[in-house]
Length: 136
Figure 1 (spheres, rainbow, N blue to C red):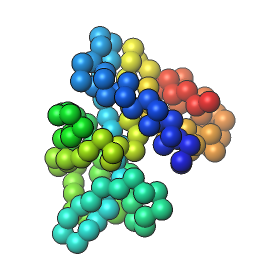
Figure 2: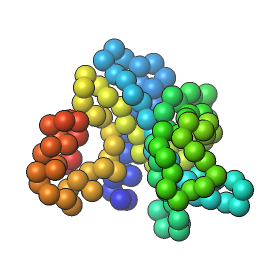
Figure 3: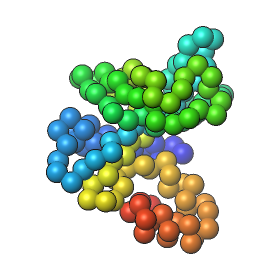
Figure 4: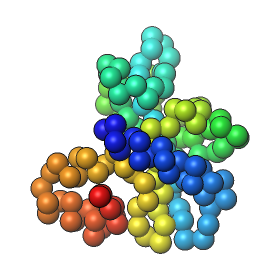
C-alpha cells in the first residue's frame, strides 16, 4: 500500500484546497484515517506496520489550518472505542488517503487500486464504469 499512500500524499494539497472551497460539480469529500485502540482511547496512525490498525473513512470534514474534525463514516470491525458518526479530530499528518466525487467520477481513493488490480479484471472494469475509479 506504500505506493498508493505516496500517490495520495502527492495530491493531498489539491484535495485540501478543494475541500476548503469546493468547486461546482464536486461533492462527498472523505478522508481515510488509520485507527488503533489505545486503552480507553482511540489513536490515529499512518504506520502500516503497526498491529491492529483499522482504516476507515470520515466525512463532513471541517478544516482549521492543518487541524481537522470530521464524523466517522464506517462501522469499525476491530476498534471498540469508536462508532459511526463519532466526531474525530486529526491533523494533516494523520491523513492516509482521500477522495471526492467530481462530475460523478471518483477522484483519489488510491488505496482501492491495489485491491482492485489484484482482483478479477471484470471487477476492475465494473468499478471503473460505476465509480469512475482510474487505476494506472
